[in-house]
Length: 458
View 1: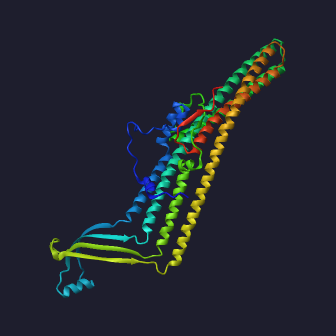
View 2: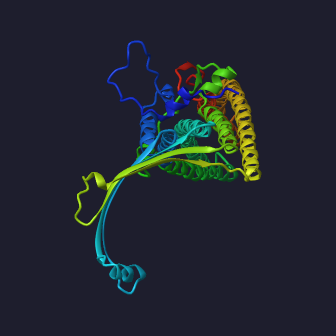
View 3: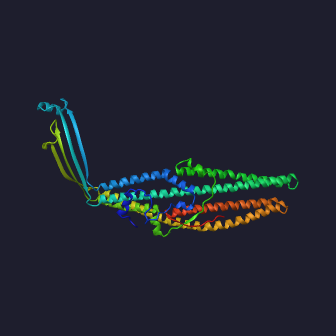
């Protein structure tokens, strides 16, 4: 397992550099992956989600907490100092032991006490427990930062997926509306022919029933569109913003991520794998924390200050007080509990390693699934496009033949139904292929330049 060295883990503690007006000439800026869809409304939705998504806000807060805990663990290796000062006025009761004794020996019942001082304490890291705790905290900060990046990738992928699904539904709705209009025209024509005695009432009723069936297919699509708009509102953090997406628009073309799927490169790029590795490194460091409890802990302390009673000057040399010493803490007769703590730390390490290996297996499977989906989806889209073109010609031929009395109405309705079903499958295939691009981005870890287009306008 590749364990993060401390300089790399410490990157989680460094604030982000301020944005520059232009990239350095030596560095080529990489555009956000969703811009490969060439859809300005999708770009706007992604920007809004990055600014307003509440899950990302919570993830950023967790990063701040982890960084603070890491700084705290690092500060434990350094001496600590404290400044104290106080002023006190007391009046002793004559019925109290101290007040009664003071009266008998002629001391005043009232006094004022002033004191100020500086104290310092330093625990010497003799056996590396504090250093191990700092490494564990730094690894935790790195893992939290990687998890925030994973959350950003997940949110942007969900926004793109919902947007593509919305556009696919809108295209399917437009197709269904066109089909309903065509069937309505056909039903009107057949009814007119039936009224003239050129067609049967049976054909007229069948045509009108087909028109009603086409109209019944519209409400479920409208409902699904409303669900997607609400989903985008939640992801973006603004329920009103998706209203600008209600107007139908074309479905963006999918693309193939131009990334190396080598396992080593994938492990460096996917934020969930980086987080899992950092968690494993932190679990390893916590074993060192547990082992250090077998040995003594040495602390050095010192105190210097001034104390005076009444109106005496604090600056007087007689008011100075000082002390210093060392303290030793050793859990000498608590080794059974330390053994249990060490066993628990080793168990946590085994758990973190298992989770890391599982995350790597899942990542490899997701990459393989994404590549297969893109490859097979492109083949399906090409075959369906050819089918739709052929069925369109067949439908037109059937309508011409029906007006000439060469075929029956059932042949025309069958041709319409077949074309509608194939066109709907083609739209769904193109939507699935575009969404497969998003799944591939997520599987690859995001953050790359894009490659060739895999879909063409049909």
